Length: 274
Ligand SMILES: C[S@@+](CC[C@H](N)C(=O)[O-])C[C@H]1O[C@@H](n2cnc3c(N)ncnc32)[C@H](O)[C@@H]1O
Image 1 (cartoon, rainbow, N blue to C red):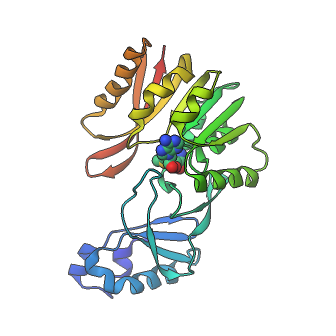
Image 2: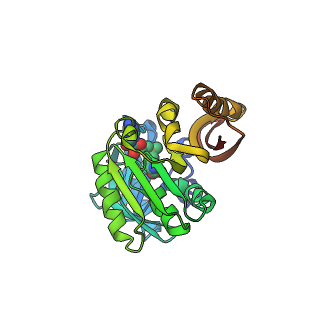
């Protein structure tokens, strides 16, 4: 729904200028950014959203930016029911979550599906920073992977991941571990065919620890936030860690999977590591 069009008759031109065009819908929760100047009108905005979208039951506004180690998003409920838990369906997969206590990007479904489509039959896949388990579940549902391991530190996200595993009954090649990636990685004695690192803000700090878990000839998917004219810098981050570890990087491609700020993209560097 284009909010500006719908609110056109209720708001002045100046107010409309301030308003964002749309909002995210996570399950039945709409999450909107309300500029400070429009806070006195937030209930009207919530009522209009609820009236025009029968599937939306809760309207929440962002109360701050994504932050903290667990990349969570504080929200304030401004309309509808007073709850923060919802269920999303992504490519047929059920994902239950609390929008405030765990990280989940509703905009990354196609990217998760893309990664799943790259997984070859029989692969062992390691997903670092696995959250409520959307990547492990998507890979399990849409590939013939042998084993998928997810690691997540936020205990609330981990509990939802376990619940989501139960909700998606037929997906039974997934193991989910709760803890700090840095502490858990040294405990693995096997190598993986593919490692997915879903921590775009500071994933590079974990590259050195993750690399030994990837077999020679395996694939690394390294997420990063990067200026649109500097994608090569993200490849360089991986290359430097590979060189330090005496590993080669025969191929690296960048897939753009979203925008996080003006001229800044969320990218995935798809790497073949020797
Ligand atoms: C950008 S989110 C990605 C979540 C999930 N993969 C998804 O796509 O929805 C990054 C996740 O990494 C987790 N995290 C941050 N630091 C961690 C660490 N040191 N070890 C394990 N998980 C960590 C956060 O709690 C968060 O859930």
